Image 1: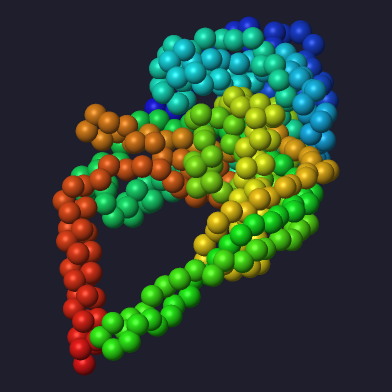
Image 2 (image 1 turned 45 degrees about the vertical axis):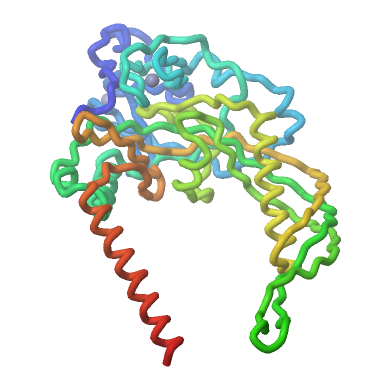
Length: 377
Ligand SMILES: [Zn+2]
Ligand SMILES: [Zn+2]
């Protein structure tokens, strides 16, 4: 398996401090190793920066004082990602925009593997505010993915034996989280199912009917941390499968955490993401109305929601992307970079699926016969 494409900058003579040249003091932070000039990358085990070349480590003082940001400010703001310290690469094949620290180079797209990747302008837009640093190493992520794949009941035995990881990339995926104080007025018409006996003699039978009634009320609720995915490579369904990401590990964003990893920039902006968040909040409110009134059917329910004190955070989430090759096809598996939780696809053995279907059918028939016998006895 090939490691992530990140050429060792040691090969690049211009990155080595020349003899006699003033070495940068420690407080003006650099991702260069102070003792050998090698590249310092973020080490998930020690949670510090570690030199790839000589093993020298530099502690990171984590700032856990993560702040919520006013959404109206966010709509106006458009700052650059850490000025000139970061570089963006755009994949001409799949459209991914990858952000790296300036000393690092993307040779291959982490998502589609193509080398059609061009260096772009510094990324304009909101700068990440929060990062949940990787705490799972690349080799552990691979191990988790392997044991996960082995437990997949429908995956062919041959696939489980070979488990050929083509590549693995640690990528910080962008998302917005929203908080909102919600006041929701609702009114509607809902119904309960009832049964009654009608007819007489031979025509005596039970029928179901619905009794409708009106409901109304107000829900006051503080909605905390709605996570909205912002990127085609890491859509909502994928993110939801990876949750939770240990929000308690969140730190104020610094580019140090990105060293040795990649980051994607958001594709859906704050405004559109907030629209998505409102739809998710609406679902939460409707679920609460349902649990309050416990009806069987809905004719209609109108909900009028006002949001106040809306805040957002632009968060980078740690995810490993791994691809398994099997019969000339590629299967993507994602590993949560902080919990090790795995989700993804594996090939399916037609035989295993067929056997399961037969067993399922047999079970259904068995239950049918059992119920019939109970009914007759
Ligand atoms: Zn070093
Ligand atoms: Zn690509």
